[in-house]
Amino acid sequence: MSEASDLGARVALTLCFEPLAEQIGSLRFALSDLCKPHLGDPDELSRVLLAAHELLENIVKYSTGSTAEFHFALERAGTGLRVRLRTKNCAHPERLADVRRRLDALRAARDPVSHYDDLIRAAAGRRDGSGLGLARIPAESELELGYVIEQDCLILTAEGMASQKAQP
Amino acid sequence: MSELGLRALSGDGFQAAPALDESRLMLRFSGSGDMNAIDPLSQYLKQVHEEALRLSVSEVSCDLQQLVFMNSSCFKSFVVWIDTVKNAEYGYRIRFLTDPNLHWQRRSLEALRRLAANLVTIETPPRTSQD
Image (cartoon, chains in turn cyan, yellow):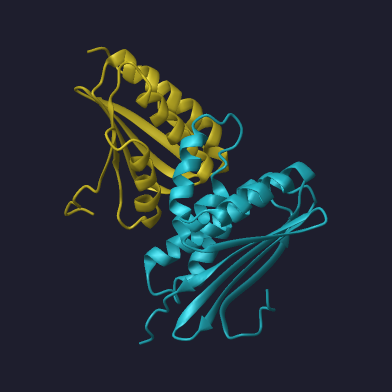
């Protein structure tokens, strides 16, 4: 992700922090306050916040290091806005393999909503975890999800376009 | 009909208040369904199902108008509950009451309706003059 100061960012946020569950709600509210003046559609704001929440929970649940990274940017792109989220955290090899399998399946799926529906049906029988958090991002947020695994670290990205609030 | 044997759920930032109205069990959720709510909600929905069976209700109504967010793990608790009702010998309908200003609800609950279209309904109650 580009540095916060370039590309005419309306909002740019970079956090390096020890991920704790009780921080997520506050971060979601902060992002809401930061983005609300710029996003033209409350539904789009809701979608962005949902993606941010699921990505943040993902690092809280699975991060093995003492710190993780969260980057958020809302940038001008043509007449609209580009939303970019990125997280980076270290994780156990089993978790990295699981994420790779899940996100490759998601990428291979023709329709993220149908794929999500399949995972929902499977989730009813799962004992541990929901297996839904990452798949929910493209299905409900309509952001494109990507990943890179670098040694023992997982980098997740979610990107998409949003409409800009008309300026008075 | 027996008295309601289900207590309110009062967690840190997440609450559920039950009430019984004739043959309908009503649950009013409030707060935010995030990581702290996962286990309490999962256990609570098991109790809801047991109570719904004990009381032989025809419907459980979940009012989510004060629930500002629900994460995927809390969402899964509803998936498990709906799946349990689907497979139960005695079933009941599940009605979700939503707030259109909480935009996540439309998409997330629509996924629950697709899971059990003949069981789940989603409604947006008309706003009263006090709203």
